[in-house]
Image (cartoon, rainbow, N blue to C red; front, side, top):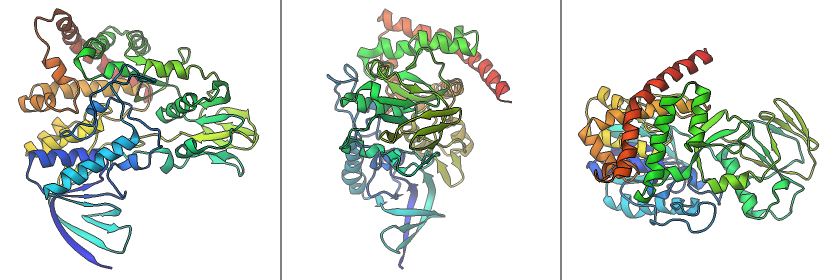
Length: 470
C-alpha cells in the first residue's frame, strides 16, 4: 500500500452534475486549485448508472455547467416532446460531462481528478483499483457534492420482497427483452415509472397489457411552462403570473391545488384521483395523453411482497400470473430529507436553494463562496429550499423559493449573476422585456401585484400544514 500526499484549495467529493457545476464556477471566478474525487470511472455521477433511454426532464438549455452549453438550441420536431426545446439523452449528458473534464477542467492545470476512488472522510480517499491511499491538505474547504444521493433503478434495492421464480426485469435491461410476457407490471408512480410506461407504449406495447402500480399519484409540472426562450414568454412567465394569482386567490389548501390545475400550472394523469405526491417532475401534455391510455392502474399502497400468483400490498392483495414481468421503478430519485447549513466552517454541503434545481443551486453556491467572506451572510443568502415529497410540500418549497428570489433581487451582484447565468433560464427573459410591449408588461404587472398577497397566503397554508402534521 502506498500513501500519496496531495494539496489543493478545494476538495470536491463527487463529479456528478452538482460537483461539476461547482468546480466550473470556481475555475471561472477564482484562481483556486481543485481536487475532485468520485467512485465512478468517469464524470456524470448517476448518469453513469441510468437506463439507456433516460432523458432530461427539463430543457437542455439550462442543465450542465454554467460556462458551456449542453443544448444545441433546437426544438424537437417529432415525438412526445414535439414543439418544445430538446431534452438531452442520458448518453449525451454523460458525454458532455466527460468532454468538460477532458477538454476544460484538466487542461486548466488547476484540477486534479481521481475517479474510481472511495472517499473516507477527513481529506482521505482510497483507490478502488489498488491499495493506494491519498491524503489531501485542504487549504480552504471540502465540498460535499454527494448530498442528493440520487437513486436510479440499477443501484436501488426494492423495499419489498420477491419470491423465487418471479420475473423481475431491471429497467436498464428492458430494451434487451427477447420474450414477450403475459403482462408488464410497472412498480412505482414517480418519474421513473412514467419513463418505463412511456417506453413500453412508444415501442408498441398494448396499453391493456400494462399494469401500473401507483402507491401515490403525483402532481406534475407542464413542461411547456419551463421553456427558456422568448417565444414561450406568455407560457413560461404567464404561468408564473397565473401561479401568483392562484395562490393569492385560494381559499383553502384544496382550493389552491384546484386553482393551480385550472390555470395549467400543475397537471395530473388521472383527473379523478387527488394526488398526494409532488416531486417536481415535468411532463408534456402529449406524454400525459399517452399515459392515459393505460387503464389498469393499481392503487393499493406500496408493494410488500410479490409471489408467483399474487401481489401483496399495504392495503390488500391482487391476483397475478407466473408469466408477468415486473419492472421496479420504486426508487425515489433523491431520498434525503435532512437539511444542513450550506456553509459550516471548512465544509460546504451543496443543497437546493432554488426549488428542484440542484445544478443551478450548486453554481450559485459556488459564486457566493467565491465572492463573500462572512459565513452568516453566506448561509442567509443560501437558505435551503427543501426537496418536496408530499403534495403540500409544494406550498413549502414555493414559499422558500419566493423568499430567496426576493432576497437575491435586492443584491446587485447576485441579480446580475443570475441574469447572466445560462442555468437560470428565465431572469434574463424578464429583464429584457421592452416597456413598450404592453402584453408582456401586463404579465409582469400581474406577477408583481400578486406576489406579496401570494406569499402571505402561503405562510397561512404552511401553518395549517404544520398543524395537520402535529
